Image (tube, rainbow, N blue to C red; front, side, top):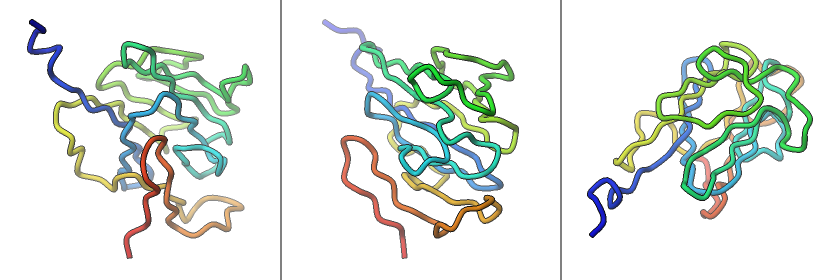
Length: 154
């Protein structure tokens, strides 16, 4: 008979804090690109974030590894830090604090038995008004791998 901990489903998310807002990205897929390129599943605008900042990859045990850069060997321009240490790659643990390029963009790696990761805005790509040379609207829907496309709230 499986142990109680083996029967408990953990829900994983990345809480990204930009300015004074938190944006929650549920992690259910195997690979997520993070950066200010509109090709990234987790889009974070601004001059402190590289176009291809980092890649999150889930291993067969359901753990997530963060890799700095584009995932093809090119590092990010601004660096990826986990718990104040610059990393090239690292297995993430619940509660890890991730900084992309500077303290202006911080993310928290969260695992919980609860599905509700509130408070925050779930599944949003957000363009910060201060982002340089950006002519995108302030809110864009994201496509989370394995889920339906999310539409912005009116």
